[in-house]
Length: 114
Image (cartoon, rainbow, N blue to C red; front, side):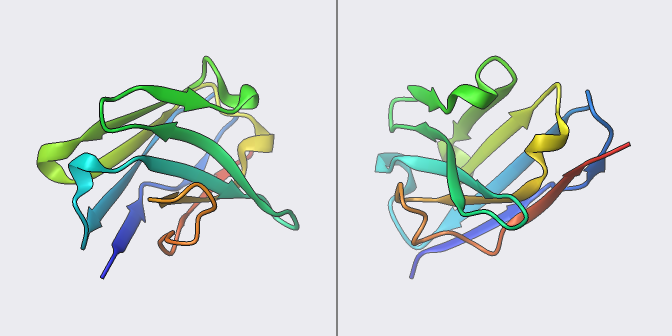
């Protein structure tokens, strides 16, 4: 079955950087679109970024220029490089193979605070 395992979350100061990872199994990773979503405290699930099988990427406006999504098909892994972090980026971050996040893993916590 589909399994997605996120990691890399941490407490970081505003302006700092983190790189999240998500290891996938149970499906043909190289053919699949992949997504990062997040859920801030008290809010709903929010789409953050997507990458297609060719590596083309899309981002929500609030992270454009700061976040970079990438994939390594040899490792069945997607990454989210997050730079210039802001307090409003505080959330649990999930990767998924569907845009609604139904397939998401357990998530990884990112806290941006001084």
